[in-house]
Image (cartoon, rainbow, N blue to C red; front, side):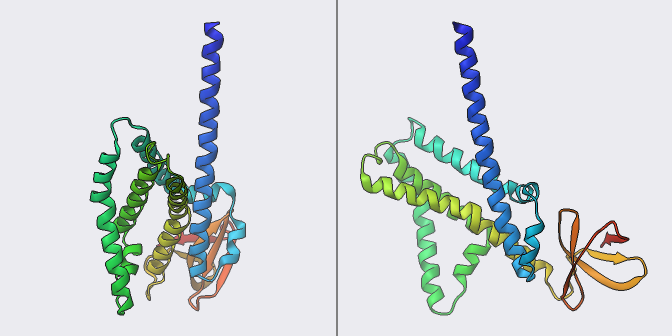
Length: 236
């Protein structure tokens, strides 16, 4: 009887791990897709995304999935911990959320007068981390057992959970991709790898790769797709 109960617990654990793995891979795939889409869009090469495989998308979005998992675990710990009361959550919001809301409000006002402080918030990695921490703390406040007794807080908890997921899966990958593409597209394109082929004097720049194919950019910014095994070599 005890052996049967232990075996059932093992099966339950395996099922939970399998479910978490599927969720994690799905998170990584979506983040990788939006990253690749935004990156290729910067080079006017959205059509190249059709050549990516599932594994390649997951590899590109793996860190966003880790980031999202850490945020989710933090949210669960805050909500489920018996030592975290509504009073503790209020102090957490005072330290994390309210200062960010103030900075964001100032940025909105400044933007109306021709400033660019709001774009700085989206581009700065520390500000993006602060923004996500604010969303997590706010969601935890709405998901606290005492707060979930109110229908309005239930609605707010769903909204903020959606905002967290959307930020990690869509907005952050797109922001990182745009920043990276802007860096590579500097006038001298010093950050891009170069591609050479025996017998051809022209220099090509490596934009991306997928399914064993290379997406190269010519000096006139036109694009070609080549097979690296066909005499091509990559170097700085």
